[in-house]
Image 1 (cartoon, one colour):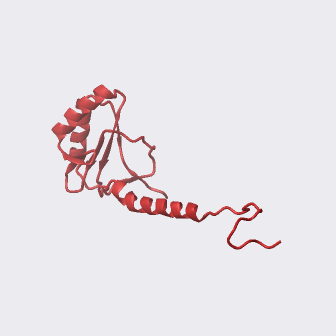
Image 2: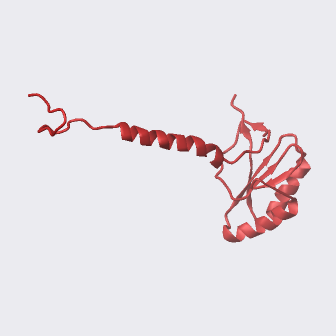
Image 3: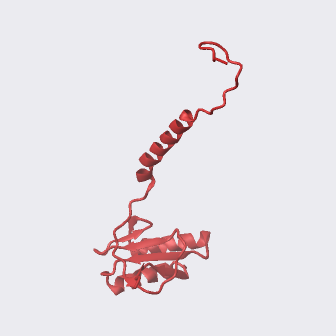
Length: 137
């Protein structure tokens, strides 16, 4: 039985046209490729000390970073010890069991790390963790 050229056929279409589906998937892929660099937060380059032991910690609203040159960042924004103490006191009201995550460059003085820990604890936060790079030996 020959198919009619320009008209109607009595046979049902047995194939699914996937070209529109592929087009949509490619557009979604391009959208993800373009927006991913925008969404990703730029990280702060901190050379963390290495240790063989260490536990994983959960993300926190109280993330403190001390860079190699001694700058203190609170949740990625420039800060100081007094602001950390005030922010800790504010956050502890909202979430009493919050844990502070302190990331200090390995070349930062011990005294500066202790002053940040003291500010966090003076603000009322009881738990804190110091970030390390796990040494896989």
